[in-house]
Image (cartoon, rainbow, N blue to C red; front, side):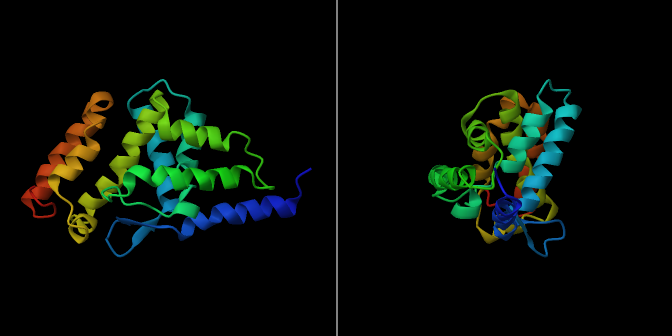
Length: 193
């Protein structure tokens, strides 16, 4: 039987997600968000957009995946979307999820399988999650006049390529992003390359 000591130790383990800072500035641009804040906002935004688009999704599964999708960053750290190391980030993140799955105080039996699904699945829940996971930092960049884009010398071509997949399943979202990419280029927030 799992003790309350083990359970609270697990809660402290996942609390470490608050210590993982991202490159994304929150509204106002005074500080970057942490991965726990991002995960909460992702869950709320997925819930909202599933209803807005009237999607036939399993809301519980969607929100669970949103809440756990960055837990691997506790061990691996956050990898910036435009980093050359981005393609391999999931390897170290999965090791962190495996560690949390086997933690004595963890009672979430499908933690690893849900993480794998959000990482590699192609369900409607996963498609929405991935699209919104890209939408939110994009939205923050627009709201902060491209602060992170400018600091990291991000180019239009990088942003367009990273978000192209959204057009197929969520054309309204993609159209809004495309308009804002052009606006960001016009304002000098993104390099026109």
